[in-house]
Length: 270
Length: 255
Image (cartoon, rainbow over all chains, first blue to last red; front, side, top):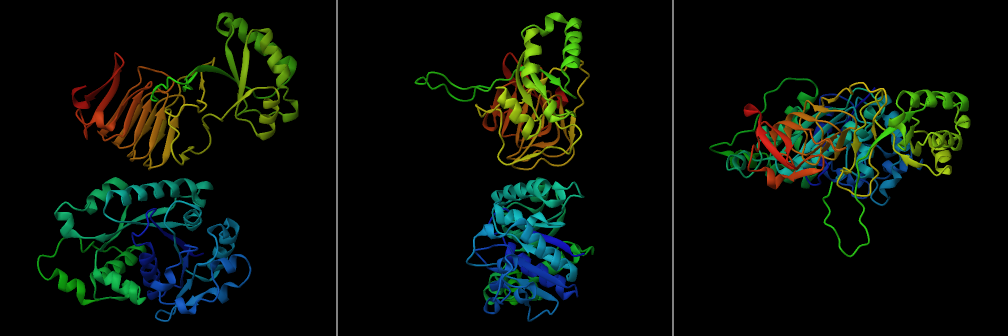
């Protein structure tokens, strides 16, 4: 049985797709057969970040509607050969994701994959609900600012009440907090919430802290999951997060401002 | 709860009302059994039942739906000056029958055996006026209602409701969440959302919390919003109670 992980946030633009790309790549790099599904029907982005947009023939909705087989739609990553991408449809309606259809696809993927990473769209509407419904675990991506924290809190409530695990009275979805765009210097100046603030409000275990970095933007633009930028802070932070997801104990890094050479280190990987 | 400003142009205004009512928990229906049980109950306290409104609770009804005859039930009750006004719970067919007998439909009450009914979606606080209010069950054989205990955080958008007794929360109540109780509310964590105690009018109800950061606190319809709570006990452990129709915040260490 595959472990099904949803990457979600409620709020848009906090780094869900970047995180989905990096976490799935990180899991696959460690030898786990992993598929990442883009649930953002109509606003598909994952294929761009994974640099496979030119290889999309069929998509998630085609598979749900029986117009293509799963094997026809899955795109194999060129860098990590245990990684597959199931792109979203750019032209269909979100309602094309039916619960039965999604279940069918996830069950079929479960037979051959170790990890299924679901990249959720923003919001708490149908697409987001479908992305989290079958999840065993959730990575809640949060930026260190109040509105993002509030939306994460909202999505945590939905995970507890509207996921399959909640509806069937199974063990609850395991929740992980991933703090992205973290800028320790700005936290020290009081311009951002600190890790401790966010942890205190959301009260879920911390999976990782990804520092704000130009590398993330550059990597996205070039279609490289930032975790592959192994020299960069952000890449290493994602690698730590994947290790923790797999049960490894790793100390949290990149949480304090570097006094010297901070920017040079940030740009080195980019 | 009078939170809407009166509009003088209107002929009337809808207000939410909290009325204590008696529920008749029906297990099965047989006309003669019903009649004799009813007579028996009334003989124990004739004054109590005179002209009272009554709700038929179908949550524990185990008989056949086809055996339900609301017209006969209404008739039996009417003969004893009891006014059946509606049904609570029941399945679709039962509710259709009830509607056919011109009875009001109330949502199912607390599910004592089921999982915690945590409503998701925007809270329907007692401030929205035309909502049917959940019914307090003044069960004739009343045992002390156990408190409802919640150990998970109450998240933004969630609503937790203790319709009969106290509500105890061993976790934070987040901004955008709402907790309601007929009795007291205890929050062993920060109270960042809304807390409404004594929602059926119990003026002796209190709210206790480890850290007062609430958006709104209400006791028996008397409320204060965040802005008015800042000056006293903000972000500290307090209790809030009603004295002379005013909400009074007292630090717990000086209580």
